[in-house]
Length: 192
Image 1 (cartoon, helix red, strand yellow):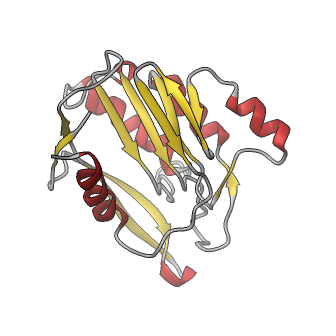
Image 2 (cartoon, rainbow, N blue to C red):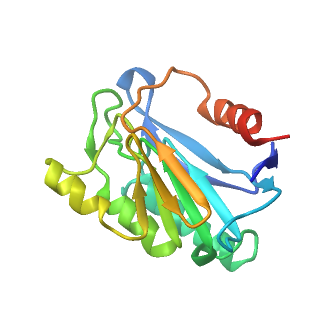
C-alpha cells in the first residue's frame, strides 16, 4: 500500500475547545478532515482513517473530542463524502485525553474512547500517547488488549489479515505542526 496523495484542503472541519498555550484560558480550534489516496487497500477495506492528538473538548457537551470526531465522521459517511465506517479501519496515533483548563501534565484513561471507535469502525489500531492511560494496572491493560477489534501497539507487531501493524506507545514529540509532519512522513515513507 502506497500513499499517492494527501489533500491540502479539508473536506470538513470539526470545531473544538482546548487549553491555550501556557495553560491560560481556552481557545477554539478546528480539526481538518483531509482525504488521501492510496494505490491499494488490503483486507477488503474501503478506507483507513488516521488521527492523533485529539486533545480537545466538544464545545456542546464537554466530552472528549474523539467522541465528536466519531459523530462527524458518521455524518460524512451518511452523505457519501467518505466510505462507511463499518468498512473502514481506524488508526489512533496517541494523545486523546484532554482537560479544557489544563494542558501540560494531564493524563487520563482513554479506554472508553478506543471502545467507542471500535464500535463504529471495523477495527482500531494504534498507540497511547504520553497523555493517555489504558488503566491503572498491567492487568487492566492486558484485558483491554484482548478485545478482538482493537490492536493496541506498544513495542510489538500485530497482524490483521494482510496488514502488519506496529507502534510504540508513550512517545513524547517535539512542538511542531504535527499534521504537516505526519503528511510529510507518510508521503516520504509510503508515497511514490
